[in-house]
Image 1 (cartoon, one colour):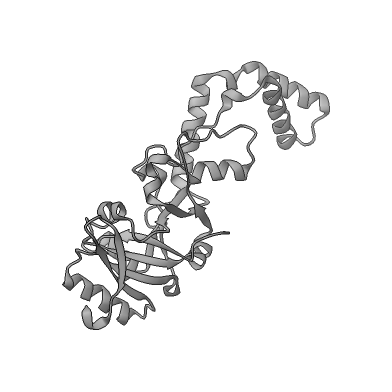
Image 2 (cartoon, helix red, strand yellow):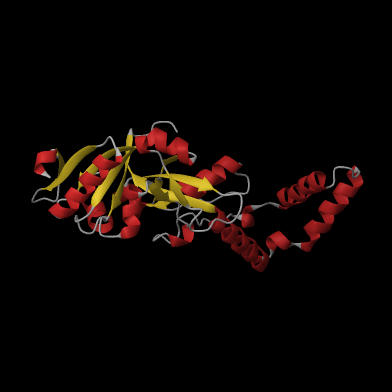
Length: 265
């Protein structure tokens, strides 16, 4: 929650009823990792193959102490030796099964809301706002992130980092959730996320946020006037205290934002 931009943005399409819910119902959707366009996003493998024999033995020893606190030292050591001899963490099929079960459970309980710090990204308007025929919403970052459970900036890598067996929970979580390949850096992404105690349905993933999280509405350069009027009217009637802007594109695909006055809408 440190060094966050004051406002984060979500590019949307007004003609898509699902995209409208963010304004009509104040609902954001926490997406499953399997729904992401990027097939590697939130799907890093844990490098069990990097474990030494000593680390594997010690892991089993710790498991024994946690699961069987009344056992003697000799019993704990026998447990660790017996499981070490099975060689499961050297068995690729077993590791593959562990990873598959982990990702299935993670996918069912984890949700992400992808945002960006920059409302003037031509490719984002093109890709996520119907070729500039949509709109963009700006949110108060700290209010929204605190309400949804926290978040931060995505880090982009030429080569994605490994999740090491020695990583702490926080290190593993950061690598898994906030790491993407460099080719996605044009998104300048920030994200907030939520972990559910039980598998989450689509309805569970819909979260209503307070109106004071909404700060800015930007009309796409090619958004129809009737749609501008609908958005403006909805915000005014709904009591949203937001500032309105128009996206303006020059011949070099550079974007500026001009204040949109009610008389011009």
